Amino acid sequence: MNQAYFEITHSFDTADIGFQILHQDMIGALKDYRNAGSAIGINHTIMGIDGAWHYDQSGLTFTAAYNQTWAKSHNQSEGSPDLCYGSGDVLYTSGYYESAHSRHGAGGYKIGLEWGDSAFRELGMKAAYTDLVEHNIYFHETSVSLGEMIHEIAMEGRIVHLTNGNEADSLQMRFLASYSF
Image (cartoon, rainbow, N blue to C red; front, side):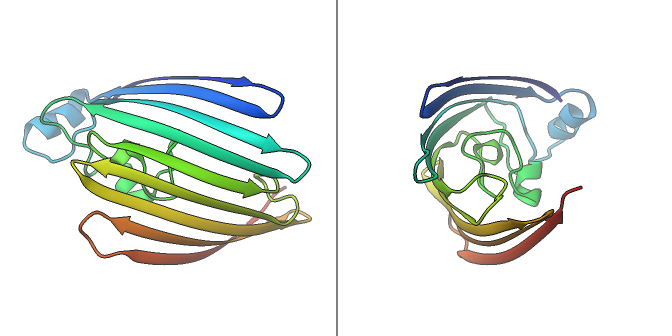
């Protein structure tokens, strides 16, 4: 796959604003696989904008983001790795599972609130809501995380609620622990 990615962020005293663009084209064996009738098609361009507002005195950070996907005709992202492994991608609207990267022609937004730092050096909490629309079908993800860093051990509890279009809703609870050295 050929991929081109560009991101730029400008920071102000108490805010950040960013812009991103990702373009992907299948090549070689992956393109041949698609041409042979596979549902996997990852030819698309995704653009996004996000903003973050930091309230240092309270330790709160509010974020808002929007991504829009444009897919080439007769291609869809269904079957992309994001649907199997969680988002884990660079897009501003990435949740733990849903992402504009995994939805054909999707537009979506994400809002979030964080208290504490991203590494949970002290007790911290994160909450996020992601909403994506693909062909008038809605995909929602709401997540709440609570975590703390104790010496070199980071612990995080997470609850994720997914509304996956026409499929049944799901609720997942996870506990994660990691050791930094």
